[in-house]
Length: 160
Ligand code: HEC
Image 1 (cartoon, rainbow, N blue to C red):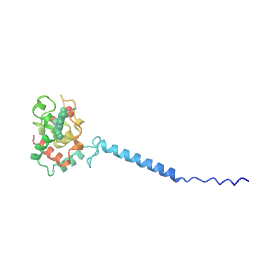
Image 2 (image 1 turned 90 degrees about the horizontal axis):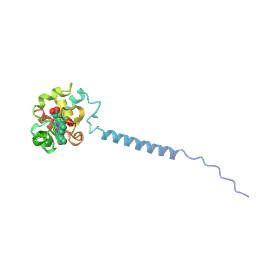
Image 3 (image 1 turned 90 degrees about the vertical axis):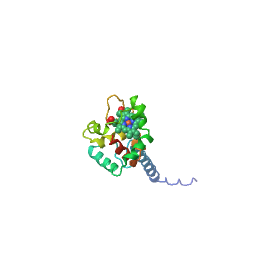
């Protein structure tokens, strides 16, 4: 006599639900990570699109609040800015000299006022094309320069 066939066990839906849940979690993490890489950095707004004159004004005011231009002068050497922007770099037209920048800056990217333009040209150098230069400035500074340093550099450049 054959034993009675055991009743077909109804499979629980939970393993599938958990698998899908874990997959969605990873997908969300990857998307969040990519969003970070493409610009959003420690509270600064994402670079493209949303950086309006108002946003810039707020950012720049905050950065300049306690800024020290004398310290900024040392920082532009430490961060390697001057290897392009001064001395032999500038003579070889690696980068525009900063002399007179504070005056030029107000007209470079209307409606941005001078301080906002200088800030933009450091954190997003491709925003404005400068005649005679072909977009060689590194794009790393929005990520590599801490806000306090950025403020000091900005204050220094606005004295040029
Ligand atoms: C590899 C060379 C290079 C380095 C390093 C570099 N820049 Fe530049 N920078 C440029 C070039 C080239 C331009 C002109 C815009 C362009 O073509 O990208 C520019 C433009 C600028 C401008 C706008 C100047 C103007 O006349 O409107 C500012 C401000 C500036 N850089 C600041 C900095 C600061 C601050 C650093 C360091 C944190 C730095 N740059 C490092 C090459 C460089």
